[in-house]
Image (cartoon, rainbow, N blue to C red; front, side):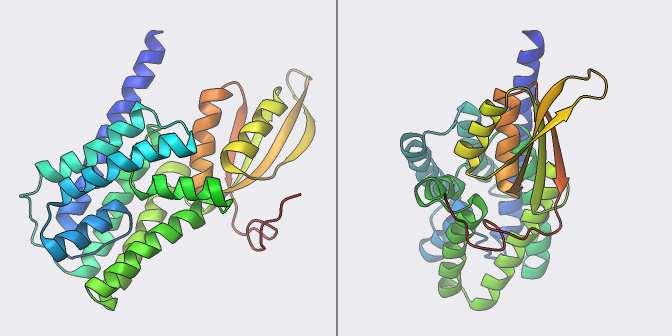
Length: 284
């Protein structure tokens, strides 16, 4: 029990630290350079430029209804951890609103803002949390359309960046896209070590339970192999599954919660050829 409480406390600590970094990246780099790098933060940058609205208040006003909508429609595990991240990022933005490093160069801001944002989000994910925002919209979109989490997030963030090109200019929109790219790579490094796709190897005695998690939670295919333990000489099932970065992060969380006895390996996959990745996904 003590160990479990300690693990939960560590998760909340990681979420708070990561959320603070996310808020700082926005105030110190993204907002001064007028980079609407996707998400609710990008929307708040646009409304700040157009109407002068406080970004922290805008993010609170958008995040809370999105969180409620995601819980109602998606039925996912949007726990208190997700709520903490959703509320703490705008709080950090509000608290550090007066900080200014004087960095307004869009190139520097897109790189360093993207790095700090990626580190912050990666730490939040390691704490099994979320910062809410349009990531919730992307998960709802994935649930009801069947498209991948990564592509759903790209659609949502792309819409925000496209709007920023109309409000600011095309050049700043390109820098915002650069920031999104840097952020995604840093998240990958912090969370799952440097590859956009992961080959997940799961050795388990509860193959149906693991299969259900993969099929229902990330909507991916899988392959099952019978293997024998070298030490115990007992037969088990090894499940192979390929997933995108965001899907692998979520799968890792689900396996930790629901199948902690499984032996899981995440391997970098340099190139994936086949339906669902290089070809259109098909359902049988």
